[in-house]
Amino acid sequence: MSARGIDHVGVTVPDLEAATAFFGAVLGARPLYDTLRREDGPVTGPETERRLGVPAGTEEVAVRMLRLPNGPGLELFEFRGTERRPPALPSDFGWQHVGFYVDDLDGAARSVEDAGGVLLGDPQRLPGPESGEHNRYQYARTPWGSTFELLTYPDPQPYEKGTAERRWTP
Image (tube, rainbow, N blue to C red; front, top):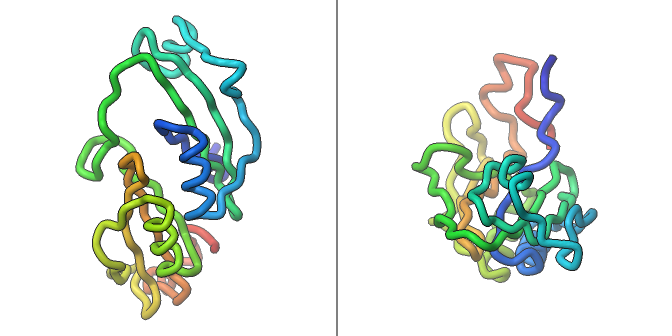
């Protein structure tokens, strides 16, 4: 048994509509469906607490699946009712960021700023086994503080010389 790939990444957001607009503007993500519409919620209680591992009193307000142009999905969750911690930083334990492949890193970076996100430093060349003349990355934060990475690697990467395996096929 092995995984076939990443189906989706779940992201908790403070405002479902604002997050939908942000990911649409920056990544071209489009709503696919709402698993929990705001008017049908909230969902709360022991079953929700057990299913999601959230504190007592947490209300699941709305859930939406966005489709990226080339997958995987982004599943947006909006909660209320309990005190929340700030978004994790890359130095914290656990999932720390999600990386999005883009064809135009500079254009995507401009979209981040135009949509209210924050760029963390300047674009950098991918290092070592990922290097190539035009292979670059840049970290950024959403308007609500979650860290993500934009990256592009149109040129062959050195690691490809030693294996037929590829990390992803853009």
